[in-house]
Amino acid sequence: MELLVREGTVDGERWTKAHRLASAARDAFYESARSDLGIGGAPPPSGQWPRQWQAELSG
Image (cartoon, rainbow, N blue to C red; front, side, top):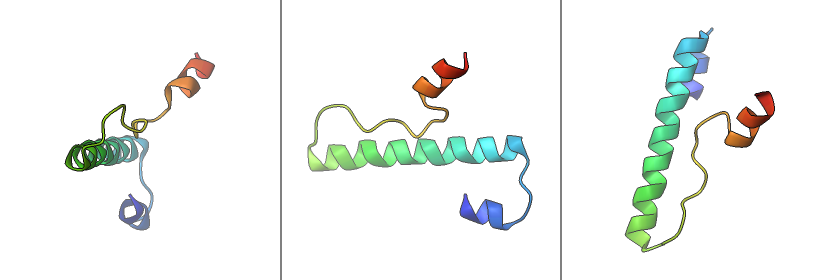
């Protein structure tokens, strides 16, 4: 995402898509790492934005 910003002005649609892809990659990394390490339980919160509590405040 840093490289995207360094390219210059980023429109909202492109930023949202980049953030969604980065969040999905983060979530997949944590899922894989936890599996490899044998860590059970719930994973850390998703990288999706806005967080649920923020969405609820806006609604």
